[in-house]
Every structure is written in C-alpha cells, then in structure tokens.
Length: 201
Length: 201
Image 1 (cartoon, helix red, strand yellow):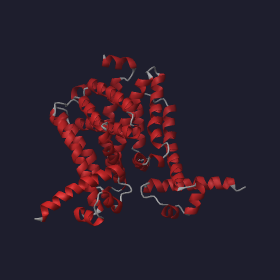
Image 2 (cartoon, chains in turn blue, brown; image 1 turned 180 degrees about the horizontal axis):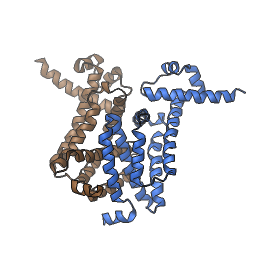
Image 3 (tube, one colour; image 1 turned 90 degrees about the horizontal axis):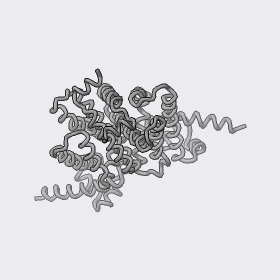
C-alpha cells in the first residue's frame, strides 16, 4: 500500500521543485539548498528522481505540459488564422505568471546548446514540436508541406524573438504595438500557396 | 616603458581568453582551467582584467565589436531594403565561424536574464542598439519613429528567432528557405507609413 502514497508525494514534491527552479534557474542549481527550500532532503529527491539530471528532466517536462495545455486549448478554439494565433500567444506570454517560464526556457535552451546530452530531446522538441503544431493546420488548408514548414519556421522565429525581447525589456507597449503591426501584415500577406506563388513569380 | 608592453599583452591575452570562452561558454567558467588553457595564470588574468566579471565583460565587448564591424560594413554598403538586410544577415550568421558567437550570445542573454547585474548593459544593448540600427534608416525614409520602432522590433525578433532555431538545429536548408519566403513577403508588405495605414484602415 505504499506506492499510491509515493506517487502522490512525488507529484507534490515535483510541484515544489518546479516552483523553486522557476525562481532560481538551472545554472547554479544544487541539491542541498533546493532540498532545504522544498522541505525535503537530497536523499528523498534522489529517491524520487534518480539523479539531479532526472529531476531537471521531470521539471522541464512538467512545465512543458503546462505550455502545451495552453496551446492545445488554443488549437481546439476557433482561433486558427496566423495573426489571431499570434495575438493569443502574446496575451499568454505577457502574463506575469508566465515570465519565469520564459526565462527558464531560454536558460535551458542556452545550456542545451552547450551540452545537448544533459537535456535529452529538449532542442529537438523546442523546434520540431512547434513547427508541426504550426504547420499541420496549414497543410490541412492545402499549403504544400515544404511551404507550410517555411511559414511555421517564420512564425516560430518571430514568436521566440518577441519572447526574447520581452524577457529582457518587459516593454509590453512597444512589443504589443509591434505584434499589432505584424499581425496586420500577416493578414495581408496571406500565406497560402497561390498568393505566395504569385508573389514569387 | 612597461605600459605599451602591458597593453599589447592584454590584447593578445584577451584574444586567447575570448577563443576559450567561445569554445567553453560562461556557465561553468572558472579562472584556473582557463588560465592554464591560455598559457597564463589566474594572477595575470586578474592583473589585466581586475576580476572574473571584468574579464567576461571585456570578452563580451570584444566579440560584440566583431559583430558590429560586420553590421557597420552592411550599413555602409548599398544594402538597405529590409529583405536584403535579412539575407545578408543570414549569410553572416550561417557562417560556421559565427556559430560559437551565437551560442555564447544566447548563453549570455539567458544568464543576464537571471542576474542582470553581472552583465551590466548587456540586455539593454542587446535590444536597444539593434532597434536603433534597424529603425534609423526607416525614420530617415519618412516612417514615423513609433512605427519604425515597431518594424525594427519585428525584424529583430524574427532575426533572433532564426538564430535560435539555427543554433539548435543547424538546418540551413529549412531556415534558408524560410528566409527566402520571409524576404519575399517583406518586399510585398512595404513597411512604409502609407501602405501600413492603408492596411489598418
């Protein structure tokens, strides 16, 4: 009868560990102060997560699940036009509660660029999963897979760049205005196959 | 007569330190292995740079100077249309020699998001200097300052996002194609005041 209790305490512990990591980051993370802050012990953390690396992987997975939940809701909503998706994504990412997630995302990204093996699957997922998320509806709408991936690459890049800017400056007014201008431009560009072929002809 | 020799050796030392930092990154940087690798001593490094933080600042400034030199050449060239600037910037950033600079840039950015005081001026410069670089020619061309900053915000974001993608995936083909599509779209959008006002009307 111990397993259900273990599972529950792991979930509760993971939540506290995630909150600590969101506040303090990964670069200087060490088990002892973390264990103290979450009212646990290094031994208990290792019991639940196997290793520090396993713990970080679990934290990143939990945070990623929260982001995906938002984007899944977005997908199931009526919002599908690129410009509308951008605006919804901006209102999500400029929520103060999301700020620490953005910082942690870029910290993980930078650390993974240096030592990819310590963050298995992170970089691949950080790009490929979102490209699919953005490209699939375009393909369904008749855009060729290659073109859809190009458009998805552009939208992902711009969105990530706005996040980088916002994380550094917190300038909601300038970035919000830029997103308005960008959304208006996106709506006029119409990234469907015919109009792009016409542009390039 | 010692000063000229000191100055020369500091410059030579800085170059070796910068090469080491580009290869190994900042997250786990410590003086002793660095000093060994650059055939110096922690004492000599501290003599020249005052502190580890002073050394990192000098390295980042030296690397930034290299980037600015490229963009200054670009500015003095005939390339001024946003799309042409993007293509020139992409051919620069996809040069294998520039890869380590991009990784170090994002590493510094992430660390500075966590502890801005350790990287004085970095985040401000990383956004504001480039916004001015991109917005100034637009203002000269008659775009209002606020609109020029919005456009500069978009172009900077997209450029940074492409860099993030490229650093993670190295997928020159997909990103190069996305930049072609994006450049073609930029050319049709025409970010001048009248056409944007017309779009938003």
